Image 1 (tube, rainbow over the protein chains, first blue to last red):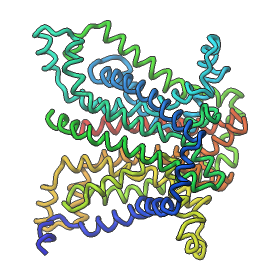
Image 2: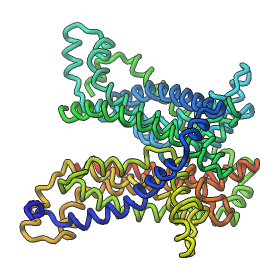
Image 3: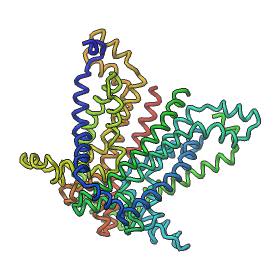
Image 4: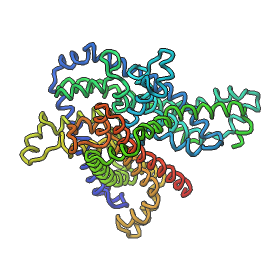
Length: 276
Length: 273
């Protein structure tokens, strides 16, 4: 009785009911059925499935390409955020707006566009083919698709932090004789580091699970350019749900670890944002 | 902006040039490619591909799935944001974490989870069958998958705004005897207007483009359970490149419109602050 009396604002029961019902249909029930299905699998079957050589090499391809792509996005994300916050130049509004294109453009469309650009007849592929470098249907192609997908994450994580940092600390450092680069390294970098790592983690997690933009450009050769989500997809097409689930579990655990690390870093990040 | 003057202009323009090169290579070029490739065989071929009956049916299904996702997630977003920001209760953190699950898992795994829930090996499959409900490899599956992948999009935009706004105004209104809906309409909604529209735009963009999860659940029945992105995939894999890019160009135009609206909303939202 006491507890309800404290709630002055109306609608607690109603919003709790609606929220829980909708959450159950979309998230909770499907997650429970995943757990039930997993419990029915024998541990031996799970281990046999995920230690299969083809599956193992797909983990390697997925992690390697996602990692390289996210490192590129980490560096370019910080550069883009810096340029967008600190400088004024023509077309700035358009540059800022187009950063979000990977969120708005369907992944399948991005996939076929990047593929047609990087095959031997494509605009970019033709150029690299002269040097004997192939992009489409190699790991380089997968990495390019994943760079595309991950661009907005680091930029959008770092931008608000840079906006909150005023120039006074840097100015003080420079007045005291620090070079501009030293000021950046010693003062700005530590401040944006948690945000940048958060963006990196989000991009990495997204890239590990990415499917649409990669399938077209990857060529999907077993042991070479076959990514893990693709293996899950082909298991599903063979109606081999138990093996698909076993492989999916590995990916799920992997993304939960990434999320956990992000939440640790974000804790620090929140303090900075609040402290201004 | 006084940082501008002190910084080395060479570094400044080098960084700006680097940013532009990166964005043009990775973002602008793919967009331009879709348009040029789709018009490669002339406008007549383009028109034929876009008005093809399978394309039209795929467009209708895409719109249906998108509208369902936006409607469902709007209702959820408003109630969930109200619940999380206006009340204190046990398990709030856990609830917030659960809402975010859909965006953290691979779309292919999202599809797999729904297959396991509603497919043949599910516990509830016999009940669904006796009710005559077909979800997997049918339109409801496509709609469910779309709702799932965009589930937190609207609540996630509303929660931070409502959190900074606090509960004082609503409490005052409630003490003066205002009803729940009146409080929401008169006090809360003006605060979240821009964030709400922004959430709808994001949700629309993602819903119309979802590929992996929908691909698992659709069964790829042409003219029945094919959405626009799936239609693009089929055409591309059949080496019908020009039609594939023509259909893609519809999605590119939608994406550009979404980005434009987004920029306007962001600008308006900042001005309103």
